[in-house]
Amino acid sequence: MGIAIRDSFTGYNTYMQGGLSTAAGFKAGIWSVGTLIFQWVPSLMLSLSTAGSMTLGTNASGASAGPLTSAVTVPQIEAYLQSMSPTPLYQQFVTDWGLFAAVSIFISLILASFMTYCIVQLTRIRRREEQRFAAAAASVAARNVPVTHLRWDRIMGEIHSESEKSWRLAILEADIMLGELLDSLGYKGETMADKMRAVERANFHTIDLAWEAHRARNRIAHESSETPLNPRDVRHTIDLYQKVFREFQFVA
Picture (cartoon, rainbow, N blue to C red):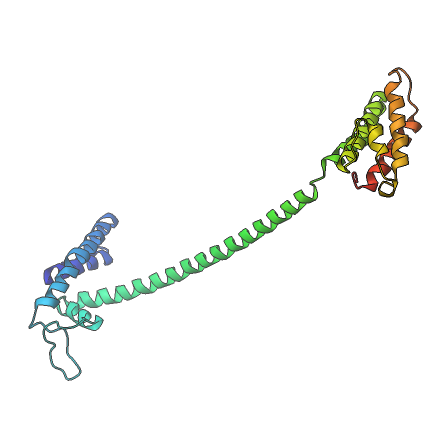
C-alpha cells in the first residue's frame, strides 16, 4: 500500500509542477482516482483491520494504539497516510487539497445560489401562468354568451342591412325565437296563437306586444316577396320582439 500511495503522490506532484501534458495529466488523474478507490481504500481498511502492531497515532498519554477494536477516526487515518508517504509530497497534497476544497465549496455555493434563483424564478413563472390562466378562464366565462343572444345579434345585423330579403328573414327568425320562449315558459299549443292564448297576463306583461309582432310577421310571411317593406314598420316589429324578449332576459 505504501508503494501505491507514494507513486500516486509522485504522479500528482509531477502534474502540478507542469511535468506532464494536459492529456497525460488527465490520464494520471484518472489513474490516481482508480488507485484511491481500488487500492488505497481496501488496503487501508485491510491494514487497519489486521495490523495488530501498527501505530495509528498516539492517545492522550502518548501510548501507541493497539489492534483495531473500534471505529477508526479521521485523525487516525490522517496519521496513517502521513506515515506511509514522504513528508514533502504529503504536505504538498494537503496544501493542494485544502485549495481544492475551498474552490469546491465556493463553486458549490455559487451553484446552490443559482439553483435557488432558478427555483424562485420558476415559482414566480408558475404563479404568473396560473394568474393568466385564471384571467383567461374568467374572460372566456364572461364571453360565454347564450346562443339566443348571438342569434339576436345576427337578427339586428340583418335589420341594419339594406336588403329587404334580410329584413324578412330577420322577422321570421325573431318569431321563431318567440315560439322557443313560449316553449321554455311551459306554454303548449299546436300553433303560435294557441301558445299565446294559454298565456296568463299576470305572468307575461308584454303579451300584447307579442301578439302585435306575430301579426306583423304573418302579414309579411303571406305577402309577396316583391311587395316592398316599410323600413319603419320593420324596425317597429323588431322593437316589439325585443321588448318581449327583454322581459324574460331572453336577449341582452
